[in-house]
Image (cartoon, rainbow, N blue to C red; front, top):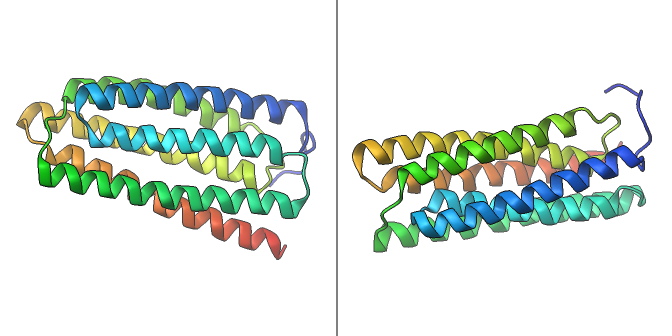
Length: 197
């Protein structure tokens, strides 16, 4: 990674994290509203994901000028949060499978396209930063995972519209949880590697 750019406590890094935090709060709120209106596990999963991301971005703002050990602790917390979120999403998908659901395909597609654009913006902002510490790398992982998840929701929404079935919504809800598991494990590994560098 390039050594050029500003230091870890720079104003541009803090500003970027605040912007990404605000965008994730807005996306999470949108996902929660559309998940309720659209009876969608995939939208709920993405809403919980963005809400947990927002909490982690807030933690990253606090961590940016702290000691390396504090930063590693914040990153570990981020990873554990993602794993807990994944368990909750899987439980919701099982409940919807057992009790039935009627997801709204058009609402899924519309919300996912909006969120995909916002997550791509977040990813671009984070990728422009240099000398990223473990928390900023975690933030980048979150935005990338979110963007991939949004694509899955669009595909599921199309299949729901074409078939009227609820299984595509449930599959994407579970897939988002699996992406969160992978991201959480990667963040925990990165924090462990950072400790030994």
